[in-house]
Image (cartoon, rainbow, N blue to C red; front, side):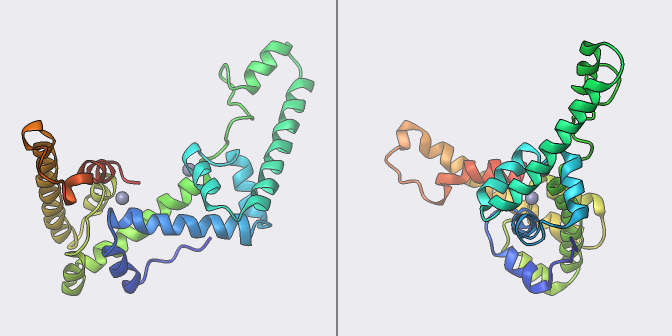
Length: 226
Ligand SMILES: [Zn+2]
Ligand SMILES: [Zn+2]
């Protein structure tokens, strides 16, 4: 699937959403990818071979495929493909030489022989998103090298820790404004957490929780990414 960098309009729109800017863009990209591959282009031979070699998707992306819906037929086609391949592999193993127990262990990944039953390549959605995250980070850093980009980014919720460290590692003139804003995001969030902790004390339990009521959830997501 073709990977295009986000337009400046898309980027600036992403700055206004809650949470990590890049995670937000990736969530949209992932949904489009699932729709395009499992619904619109499920007959794509090259992609089908990738999914077959990966033995499907990782546990996280399997959950996302189930959430997206609209892809029941696509999922049926690719999983039937994979089961057929697995059956063929198992049959070939059973027909080969050597002891029955040794052959089965080998097929299941025991010993030094890499198992033909296991995934032969990474989850296609993981691979696609890794590539996309690099494209998004490059576009973000380019935008932050401009004054208009910095002004728009000032409204954003910053980046999660994995995307922030990846952006810093890329380097370039966009890193300085990115880091300055990130420090402010962390400072604000830390203040909200301290307010949440203070109001959680029984002495102050009469005080009403405001925006800080879900600061713990936002902090957890901002550390891990989504
Ligand atoms: Zn992120
Ligand atoms: Zn995955």
